[in-house]
Amino acid sequence: MIFNKQVECLAPRALKDIQSKRLCRIVNYMQRKSPVYQKKFAQSRVILRKIKSINDIDHLPFTVKEDLRDTYPFGIFSAPMSDIREIHVSSGTTGNPTVVGYSKEDLDLWANVIARSLCCAGAVPGDMIQIAYGYGLFTGGLGLHYGSLLLGLTVIPCSSGQTKRQLKIMQDFRPRVLACTPSYALYMAETAGELGIDAKKSSWKIGIFGAEPWSEAMRQQIEKRWDLEAIDIYGLSEIIGPGVACECHCKNGLHVPWDVFYPEVIDPKTLKKAKPGIPGELVVTTLTKLGMPLIRYRTRDIVTINYEKCACGRTSPRISKVLGRTDDMIVVRGVNVFPTQIEEVLLNIEGAEPHYQIIVERHKGLDRLEVLVELKESFFSDEVKQLQNFEQRISKEIESVLSIGVKVRLVEPKSIERSEGKSKRIIDKRSL
Image (tube, rainbow, N blue to C red):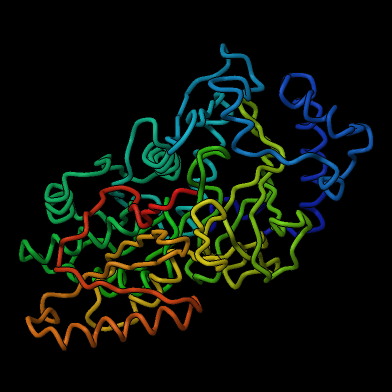
């Protein structure tokens, strides 16, 4: 099922006309309404009358997260506060959080792109969806909620946490669709096993997972444990929340509704556009938002992009699963390290659980990388030699991928802290 076939299957040439008109309109709107962009356009010496086509977008300046934090709380808004109908906040590790404002039109847009995403994932009107993303200031729960209602789903607004209750609701209400973070899906599978629940017999047939990077190996692990189709959904609060992109049943990239979100992939060092298929940083321009439109927002997410028509019939470009983040990436002895690289290795080693933590320390000027890995109960042994051999095996596998030395330390099952939201994978103890 395709939610809006007329738009989602439109020929790229026809869509380009729509994008061009919308870009011109939103740039002029922001010039009138946004002091922040008035200043950015002036500093970049943008001549707005020369912005006539979507091809002219690279003449416009980039927007970065600091633009939002430096104008905290509402300075980045283009609409007056009297037109803002909802506010969300994403927490940050340093400085001010980012605040996102939605007009009534933006909320309608959000529901629309989520409804498209749900159709991409395979949901149909009449399905019941269990939403185990957090509600409140986090965009995940409410975004899925609005889109589910528009599509005609029955919503169970569980929010995150209370895992035993989540499993009871699954057993009693029999929802077909689950929405949560991928790490929480694995945690629920682990808890189900402890409670004697056969996860393979669950009612969930479609899982819509996002809010954190996850690998193909983790997808296979989730699908194996729950016997469902694991679909990747992508979003970030600065753009709109979930709904910026979503996989279809082909699982060959996440479709971007590029009539409303225009994607670019750039080399984060040169800021030049990367060729299709080459990893780079995703940049997104909101073409129709009114409350807080953004021009060429640098997401910090590393992806590839594919402009070929999908087998599902949609003509929108597809981005890959997030390969890493430029800000979550750690540099160890000059090597770029992403948690998903280590995750991919661990999930392909029998006996290792998909629960791990990366610790980076600096000793006498030299960076050290240690990976804590949980073993399954059946593989954990009292024999020191056996455990040492297993550690060495995992270490060699990771080193072959990262090309740097790694210390692996096996830990007891369930000893790494679980998360009901986004998992914290990296502990960087260096004084950088």
